Length: 211
Image 1 (cartoon, one colour):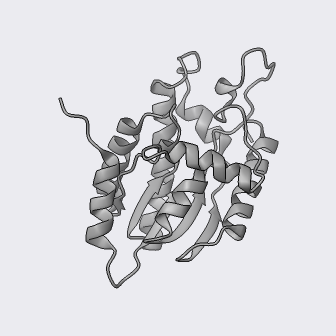
Image 2: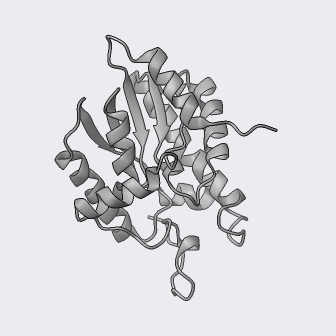
């Protein structure tokens, strides 16, 4: 079975869609460092809105820190086409309800897939309501994230909400390496765990909380 090159699919979508008119794209972002290379790439072709919706992040202070770093990068980074920032609601109770019964599963499995779907559904819904041409996510920049699953979920939500999904695997072509370099250049806070309480480094004594 041949593996899909999402990078090539994205390039084809861009070539077919970005002509005289600059399409509007809603980019779900998990954090500022992961967004750096994605914003640099996408803003060459799209008018981008960064949508920060991450009810999975624990604790609330960490959520706020990541949100402000994301907002700062959008404000400071020079781009060809406009890039703006929208912060979604912090609905941690919704995250815990979504992953109920999956708390003990291994990182990178079904619990994470449910979290992908939760965040991408909110992105697709907002994109549909606001009339965006495309939506996508920064999540595939990470070597630890499942690009096949992300694109499968995104494509399904595109049908449900009537907004085109931009296929992507941003880690390709040294994307992850470039993102770390840009993060250092802009002096960005870079966390040492994915975000949710279940992904915290081993030995960290915390309990899930809903805000």
